[in-house]
Length: 65
Image (cartoon, rainbow, N blue to C red; front, side, top):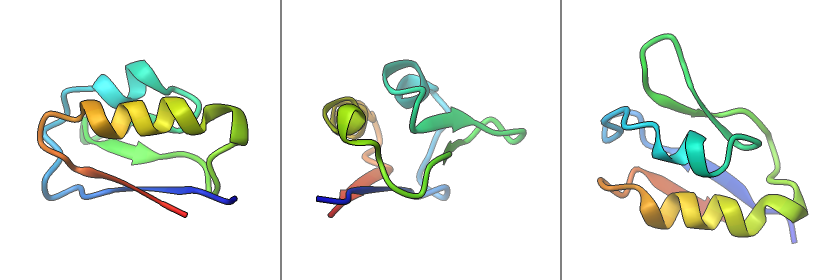
């Protein structure tokens, strides 16, 4: 299953939690907002990416498959 992460940058508050939990998928950009750094979430990172999405305090991350 190919999963993708999407960050709603209008909702993101730049807390950095996602990049801390799953640095293989998320990083903070020059605007201090989260961005996705992979087209497809690596299989071994799917659980971490979902945890990052679930941990987002403003629900700015969506994981789609």
